[in-house]
Length: 409
Image (cartoon, rainbow, N blue to C red; front, top):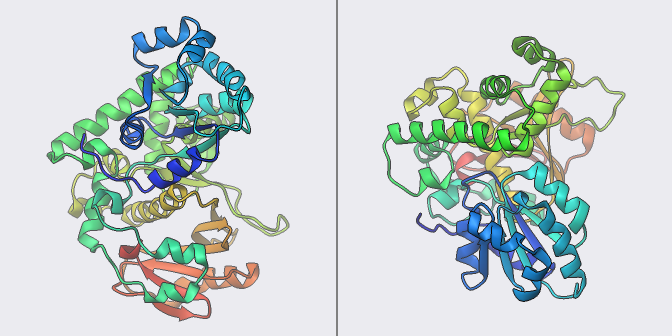
């Protein structure tokens, strides 16, 4: 696999200077092992999915750590619950030393449990996502995120697109998984790859992580999530369709979120006395997998699809959140909908305050489209509101409300 510079690289290097251990989480095949080998080629690496490495480490973990001094990389660390306990003891022997151990893992629920139980306070957690479109196209990262961090809101209006609509549509169809991005393949290959990825995810990862789960029901549930991406999720409707209970649907959503397939967006509700929908929102995190689930295999099919607006909203929202993650900018992401159907696509909350973001797939804006975001800004005293379209330039819409072209992200 060709090596592409990842935006998160600097963040991982920084964390290795600050913490005794660092863990890189992410979905299967997002390039965790490739990235760690690229960043730290001289550090010894043990892949716990490889039986010989697993046996070598587990024959006597304490003896292994004693005779193999740090730094060490452990790939697929969730396969070894015993390793975490041994690492805690070893790290505590000299906790002041940073960068002793670097771990990677594909299964968030299992791995996070071991971390919170054994390594809390000793380890930094970072998440590796599929490629952003700036990574996939080898282009510089946008000033958008610097402006957001520095809170120089007026600079948003000065942004100009660095990516064309044609480029973004292609990126949306293909998604961001390295195997698809780094090689020139046919549409048929992308379909076969996505089909095998989903089968492996369910038949291997989910079967191993949740042995009591009804895989047929979960497989149908994943397909329904694809159809529901970008929309508010009615648990009772899904439960009736699958003939399962609402608590089962909630557990399915937790599994899909915890294994990095689904981006869960709870509803923003600063005042519990207000009338807001309680239904959460979310989407399949990789647009390429989402398009495959919806039988979309070309740019033209995507633009003509009845769910194009929802798909585009998910694609843009995920681009923003991936960039915040790679820069270690702490944030919470929300959806927003009142009982009278007033909606905002994405709310982000972080050091920059609470910022509402509206995402439109078109070019022009109409005043009625801005009522929800302007009302939200007034109610919650937001420092800025952002409207994203496929327009050609940034500009000021109104007081503290700016337009940003999608190509600027």
